[in-house]
Length: 367
Ligand code: HXH
Image (cartoon, rainbow, N blue to C red; front, side):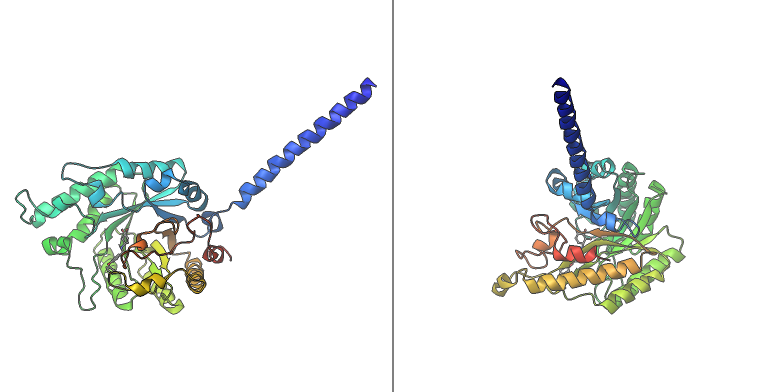
């Protein structure tokens, strides 16, 4: 009788332990099923995302870790936020983002060292409020770049050194920014030199938008070709890629990528999003009819097709394309919520407001 009890006990234990093993392997399967964009694209290029320090404290952090293997600070490293006063840097936000990337074995892109927007008020004036000289401004630029790049040396593998210096006007080459008006084109070459001096290992990019426009593209190509020829340390071109349901066309994007490949520099798509509204190239207030312009099934379909097209071409150009970064995490919040139309919500990303993959996501990973 005792023997039977023992056999019964052993049987119970065996069943329990195999049940335990089963749950363990089921859990493992579940983990394997949680593939992210970075896994689908592991043999192509890193997939990045622009973040705020706040996003890293919410449930978006889990999504970021699952889907992405590269991070950019959306705002925290821009000159205004990080260098609010001449003798004062604000490191907290940028440091938190770099620490998150390091903790999670992600690559980190730096954005951006020299730009005409989000610059601190003190940068272009002296204590009396008069415009500073070229010498003073270049010295300030050098101090800024040296301090920021040195702090993250070895932690940031690529920097957007100069952002958006090419004009949108057909008959004008350089944007008439304060940098340009005070220094002439020299601030561009100097910015690259300062960055290279501070971290010789970092890859240095020129970054701009609306590169799918043939006229603007030609100017960007001219700029980077001249920089390269002059021996300026530049390694890549960042195509922001703020596109929309009505652009780019397949031919336009293919021509864009192949034209840039001809420069011999590496390419990255640095700020990808696809607005569900037709592209507008100037800002405006919202109009009553905008309210009806919501995320319809038709828009969802159009957005899915553009995303599909983009990633087909990105994969085709994988030899030259060394990264694709999304500008924001999910439709819960994006910079396009207020831009270019104030107060209008946009749905430009691959994850919806509940952080669930959208239809476009499945098209991007289906290949
Ligand atoms: C990017 N500029 C910046 O690189 C990035 O740092 C920022 O967080 C978001 C977008 C894109 C941009 C370019 C031009 C522009 C606005 C945004 O100017 C316009 C003004 C009115 C209408 C359309 C464009």
